[in-house]
Length: 159
View 1 (cartoon, helix red, strand yellow):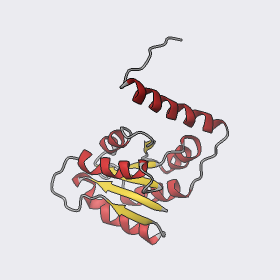
View 2 (cartoon, rainbow, N blue to C red):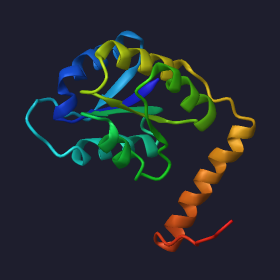
View 3 (cartoon, one colour):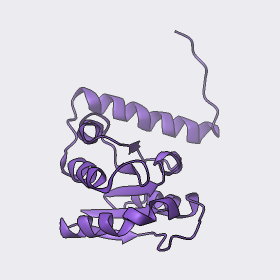
View 4 (cartoon, rainbow, N blue to C red):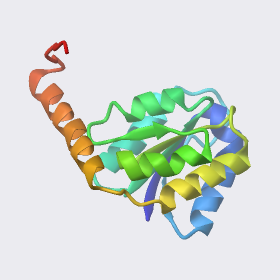
Protein backbone atom coordinates (compact mmCIF):
# COMPACT_ATOMS: atom_id res chain seq x y z
CA UNK A 1 0.00 0.00 0.00
CA UNK A 2 1.25 3.51 -0.76
CA UNK A 3 1.04 5.77 2.28
CA UNK A 4 1.42 9.56 2.41
CA UNK A 5 3.13 10.43 5.68
CA UNK A 6 3.65 13.77 7.40
CA UNK A 7 4.56 15.04 10.84
CA UNK A 8 5.39 18.24 12.62
CA UNK A 9 8.19 18.93 15.10
CA UNK A 10 6.08 17.74 18.06
CA UNK A 11 5.89 14.25 16.54
CA UNK A 12 9.51 14.21 15.37
CA UNK A 13 10.61 11.91 18.18
CA UNK A 14 8.34 9.09 16.92
CA UNK A 15 8.67 9.90 13.22
CA UNK A 16 11.50 7.57 12.22
CA UNK A 17 10.18 4.58 14.15
CA UNK A 18 6.76 4.95 12.51
CA UNK A 19 8.32 5.31 9.05
CA UNK A 20 10.57 2.29 9.66
CA UNK A 21 7.60 0.17 10.80
CA UNK A 22 5.49 1.14 7.79
CA UNK A 23 8.30 0.25 5.42
CA UNK A 24 9.13 -2.97 7.29
CA UNK A 25 5.49 -3.99 6.87
CA UNK A 26 5.89 -3.65 3.10
CA UNK A 27 4.31 -0.25 2.53
CA UNK A 28 5.67 2.37 0.17
CA UNK A 29 5.87 5.70 1.98
CA UNK A 30 5.65 9.16 0.46
CA UNK A 31 7.38 11.28 3.11
CA UNK A 32 6.20 14.89 3.35
CA UNK A 33 8.28 15.64 6.47
CA UNK A 34 9.22 17.50 8.56
CA UNK A 35 12.62 15.94 8.94
CA UNK A 36 13.88 18.02 11.87
CA UNK A 37 12.80 18.85 15.40
CA UNK A 38 12.79 22.60 14.64
CA UNK A 39 9.41 24.24 15.21
CA UNK A 40 7.23 24.28 12.10
CA UNK A 41 3.63 25.04 11.24
CA UNK A 42 1.91 21.66 10.94
CA UNK A 43 -0.48 22.69 8.11
CA UNK A 44 2.56 23.18 5.85
CA UNK A 45 3.36 19.46 6.10
CA UNK A 46 0.02 17.78 6.78
CA UNK A 47 -1.89 19.45 3.92
CA UNK A 48 0.44 18.19 1.15
CA UNK A 49 0.15 14.62 2.46
CA UNK A 50 -3.65 14.87 2.59
CA UNK A 51 -3.72 16.43 -0.89
CA UNK A 52 -1.61 13.56 -2.23
CA UNK A 53 -4.16 11.13 -0.78
CA UNK A 54 -7.09 13.03 -2.28
CA UNK A 55 -5.33 13.17 -5.65
CA UNK A 56 -4.90 9.38 -5.70
CA UNK A 57 -1.12 9.49 -5.32
CA UNK A 58 -1.47 7.47 -2.11
CA UNK A 59 -3.90 4.83 -0.90
CA UNK A 60 -3.91 6.11 2.68
CA UNK A 61 -2.27 8.79 4.80
CA UNK A 62 -0.74 8.78 8.27
CA UNK A 63 -0.25 12.21 9.82
CA UNK A 64 1.20 13.13 13.20
CA UNK A 65 1.51 16.12 15.47
CA UNK A 66 1.86 16.52 19.23
CA UNK A 67 -1.77 15.76 20.05
CA UNK A 68 -2.97 14.57 16.65
CA UNK A 69 -5.76 17.14 16.80
CA UNK A 70 -4.21 19.77 14.54
CA UNK A 71 -3.11 17.13 12.03
CA UNK A 72 -6.62 15.69 11.87
CA UNK A 73 -8.23 19.12 11.46
CA UNK A 74 -5.92 20.02 8.56
CA UNK A 75 -6.32 16.66 6.83
CA UNK A 76 -10.11 16.84 7.10
CA UNK A 77 -10.16 20.19 5.28
CA UNK A 78 -9.17 18.37 2.08
CA UNK A 79 -12.24 17.06 0.21
CA UNK A 80 -12.26 13.29 0.02
CA UNK A 81 -10.14 12.81 3.12
CA UNK A 82 -11.74 11.12 6.11
CA UNK A 83 -9.10 11.45 8.81
CA UNK A 84 -9.59 9.86 12.22
CA UNK A 85 -7.57 10.84 15.27
CA UNK A 86 -7.03 7.54 17.06
CA UNK A 87 -5.44 7.09 20.47
CA UNK A 88 -6.69 3.57 21.28
CA UNK A 89 -6.04 0.41 19.28
CA UNK A 90 -9.69 -0.64 19.62
CA UNK A 91 -10.83 2.46 17.75
CA UNK A 92 -8.41 1.90 14.86
CA UNK A 93 -10.41 -1.05 13.59
CA UNK A 94 -13.77 0.66 14.08
CA UNK A 95 -12.87 3.74 12.08
CA UNK A 96 -11.88 1.56 9.15
CA UNK A 97 -14.85 -0.81 9.45
CA UNK A 98 -17.53 1.85 9.93
CA UNK A 99 -16.14 5.11 8.53
CA UNK A 100 -13.79 3.90 5.79
CA UNK A 101 -11.26 6.42 7.13
CA UNK A 102 -8.48 6.89 4.63
CA UNK A 103 -6.24 9.00 6.84
CA UNK A 104 -5.01 8.34 10.35
CA UNK A 105 -3.87 11.03 12.78
CA UNK A 106 -1.58 9.98 15.60
CA UNK A 107 -0.54 11.80 18.78
CA UNK A 108 3.24 11.97 18.90
CA UNK A 109 3.39 13.29 22.45
CA UNK A 110 0.29 11.87 24.10
CA UNK A 111 0.47 8.23 23.00
CA UNK A 112 3.43 5.87 23.50
CA UNK A 113 5.25 4.75 20.37
CA UNK A 114 4.31 1.09 20.76
CA UNK A 115 0.63 2.02 21.00
CA UNK A 116 0.88 4.24 17.91
CA UNK A 117 2.52 1.39 15.99
CA UNK A 118 -0.25 -1.01 17.05
CA UNK A 119 -2.86 1.58 16.05
CA UNK A 120 -1.29 2.08 12.63
CA UNK A 121 -0.92 -1.62 11.95
CA UNK A 122 -4.48 -2.37 13.01
CA UNK A 123 -5.83 0.53 10.96
CA UNK A 124 -3.91 -0.50 7.85
CA UNK A 125 -4.96 -4.15 8.14
CA UNK A 126 -8.67 -3.55 8.74
CA UNK A 127 -11.05 -3.49 5.76
CA UNK A 128 -14.15 -1.35 5.37
CA UNK A 129 -17.31 -3.34 6.13
CA UNK A 130 -19.52 -1.55 3.62
CA UNK A 131 -23.20 -2.42 4.00
CA UNK A 132 -25.08 0.13 6.10
CA UNK A 133 -21.81 2.01 6.63
CA UNK A 134 -21.47 2.65 2.89
CA UNK A 135 -24.63 4.75 2.95
CA UNK A 136 -23.13 6.95 5.67
CA UNK A 137 -19.82 7.40 3.86
CA UNK A 138 -21.77 8.39 0.73
CA UNK A 139 -23.63 11.01 2.78
CA UNK A 140 -20.30 12.47 3.87
CA UNK A 141 -19.21 12.69 0.22
CA UNK A 142 -22.48 14.40 -0.72
CA UNK A 143 -22.00 16.88 2.09
CA UNK A 144 -18.53 17.70 0.78
CA UNK A 145 -19.96 18.18 -2.72
CA UNK A 146 -22.71 20.46 -1.42
CA UNK A 147 -20.27 22.59 0.55
CA UNK A 148 -18.02 22.89 -2.51
CA UNK A 149 -20.97 23.86 -4.72
CA UNK A 150 -22.30 26.48 -2.33
CA UNK A 151 -18.96 27.96 -1.35
CA UNK A 152 -19.28 26.70 2.19
CA UNK A 153 -22.88 27.62 2.86
CA UNK A 154 -24.91 24.85 4.44
CA UNK A 155 -28.63 24.82 4.89
CA UNK A 156 -29.83 24.82 8.44
CA UNK A 157 -32.42 22.26 9.41
CA UNK A 158 -33.99 21.48 12.72
CA UNK A 159 -35.35 18.11 13.67
